[in-house]
Image (cartoon, rainbow, N blue to C red; front, top):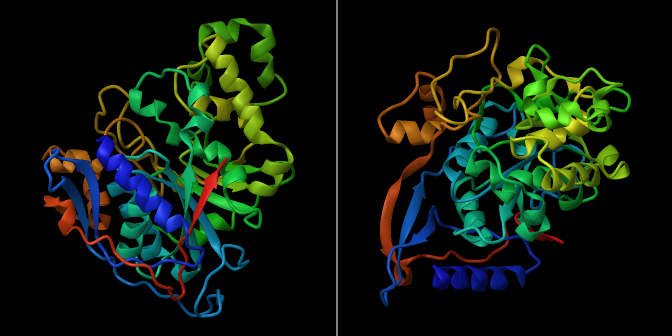
Length: 386
């Protein structure tokens, strides 16, 4: 494993030495080292190339035909994390967005990759490029030590992944010219035009838009110690807090930066390290800062909980009403259950967007690591936060 990480670090150093956009011709990704032989054998994920989706009539023209800047005002900005564990879900999510968008060429993806993921950010980037050749995107490297000392234990180990907290830092990570972004988890598929969600109006001082669920028992997201402390619990005294899921959010990054909301979230995480006030990973700090001051969005944009609860991952059904976005939040993921031949009924709705083609072992010397060249109508770059 150490040898693999070294190779990934070298690849990143080479790529980061170039300032021009990159294009890579490969649809496979090194996942993990299989053995320590001279051939350096590795497992490789393989994905099919997605269909090429083009703008409909009336879409704004972005870029100059050769290069799309993230500062282009005609773009819809989407931020997602990118890692080897949830890569299959991320690819399906991107595919679903493009398939249903009225102006897919005006969608720009911002991928946040972990610094020490088993698959290097450079390799993840070339896989995205080869799977979606016309996609406009940028990859940012998230240093895990930015947040690792703020994370407390959760009810499920997966919730402790530092990359879950990357959404807290979008205002710092993304280019300053990006003043609004849609954040999406990797376990979703969009079945409607993403431009409809993008056009959400955030009224007054509100800087987060998300479906709210005011019928949920809000008290269960915090410990008895939190509610019994009048100094802590009064944070909600001037608000009418409702639960919202942070896997789908429209975010005003101008207001976020001006109000230093990243630091406000960190303050609650620091308190959590000193005394236990919640159990669920990255969600409660967002609730503490924003619950009661969220722009409510139609529930159709986050049919969440399809992964079941955080312990058993049991099957769930849809909430009543129309659906624009399906979200497998919770323990169970559709690609895992489908591979195990134990799918839930709704997992079959995710399957049409799956581009995964299989897994095989190859020798490092036989792996095509791609090439560097200028790209047309696309951009891929690196930015390292902190």
